[in-house]
Amino acid sequence: MRWFYEVASIGVVSSWRWLLASVVVVGAVVGILFATGVFGGGEAETPMVTVTSPTPTPAPTPAPTPASTVEPTTAPLPKVISVPILATRAENVGSLEFVLRYDPARLEFTEMETGLLAGNAIISSSSSRPGRIWAGIIDADGITGSGPVAVVKFNILDQSRGSLPLTLESIVAFDSNTLVDIITTTTPGEFNGPGLALLSPIVTFQ
Image (cartoon, rainbow, N blue to C red):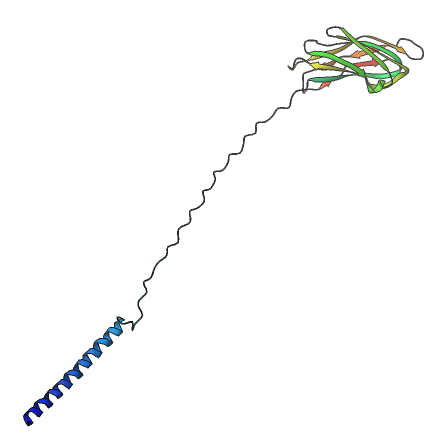
């Protein structure tokens, strides 16, 4: 009986030591597992996710528009000219008659009107022959002074340049008071084409 009790005591003591060793081992293992985070004792390492922003595509730069080429424009040439008939040293000129000669191949007569010096006068003109214009001016008060007594208008037929004489001839003038003939001299004018200076024909009273 004593032998049995001793064997049982040995078994209990041995079982207790084995149980204690087992508890120690299990505790160590559990501690290791908690330390490594298997049972949630440590925070799980969150993986880093790198978000790459899309690279913006640069807007295309518009190609420079070439400046439009502006071609220089040429001013249109005049199609009509006005030729003043000038008088100098006029004194009480009651009537004046003359013929103006011109080149009908380059000029076309359209009309004649009174000039500033003969503003109150009556004027009449005709062109029965190409290249010749007859004109008659009557002023009852008498024309006195210097300036244009008439203005002749032409259409330009030929735009070429070159001297074109404008000549006064067959001059007849009378004094408005005495009706005596007045001696006159003339100076021819000149037309040199569009864009150039125009020289007016002149009648000078003596």
